[in-house]
Image (cartoon, rainbow, N blue to C red):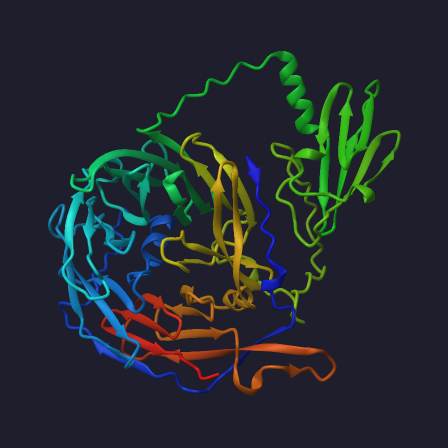
Length: 572
């Protein structure tokens, strides 16, 4: 497993960004009222779906699906199970009449307790996947979505035991590999554990193939992953070789019908091996600051300790056992600044981080946890970079979040069934996922200090895989932390603005470039600074906001009773 360090591209950051200035200019809002039949279909959790996982799954689902291949087109499912198309004409700035695209079939008929919401995922200019929330999954041919028209069902996946109670779609891809056409779909559901109290997340990766365009689609295989956490982000890698997950707890493959999982028999450890493992696990302790790490090794009589710092690699050997190997450190250290003191009862080593300013989740994989003495009650917290104020209470996770919760991004390889790459995010959950370009995996927005950085998968084949810093929402990580009532967060494909949407009434818009004469302001006693523009839209009488779709110059909102278009074009 390779550890990935997420280093933002400095050329995409603004060190002179000085926050957002409130603009009182009104935003034109187009409002279209929905009839009772065309109001969005919405399923609420049943009495058996009471876990935190269910609350996140149902409460944060975006019911408005953007078409990455056709700007201005988005879709939702109405109460009669018809997929409705919303089309915004950019040339005249108006909404076209609502039209139907596809009538869903029902696996079990009317809604019942335990069902999930319908979900839709676009795979290409031609194909889309539809999950009915009752266990059914259908591949449809959408034709030319720019012109509109009725969709045609092409293939229905068979009933899957792990998903028969219902699921939502997290991702899907259409691939052509060695002349074979492939459809990949990722379904997600939450099930109650049978043997113990609690719930677990099930992710099912389904595959269908078509050998010849003149022949029909055939169901091919299923992969199942399970975990105790919530999948904040889930995206298939191009070519369907891996699944990339961001979660607070790890997931692992438990079923693979295409490439059966080989059971691993763990050898019974010998007495010498047990002693060696015990020595490696408990013979030292370590603490850290933002800049350095201190390792303390208690010395024992008649035990020989040796330290080597050759070619920039630190090694500590206890008799014949290596207890500390610099090649396995979480990140790089500065070998020239490494120092140690050899006292009678203790060996103390001081390491300096090559990239200071961050806390390591571990020293070496499988090693002891950091010794935490805790901060003094009156100790000041470190100030926020690029801002003059200190960290606030809202910066330390959401309410109800477990203490010590750590988020990771994992690349789970389909062939080896192992985690091939991992990146640690600390206690900052991913902000949101958004499609920046059609055909590419969803970009993931992460908080980096005060900013919101968007990362996109990069895989050129073989063992090379990484996340590339694609763009930055300046100071967005800071402003979103104070919005405790936020429901949706997203941004435009060109990263020109970001949106924070509450469940009702308030929509906050953050444009990173103010425009006009506001650019190039100077502090009275400082260099030139850059500011952004903040706008607030208050919605009255529209009910709860159920979905959002952002384009470069406008935002479409779906509420319980209305379709709203916020026309955000600001003349520079």
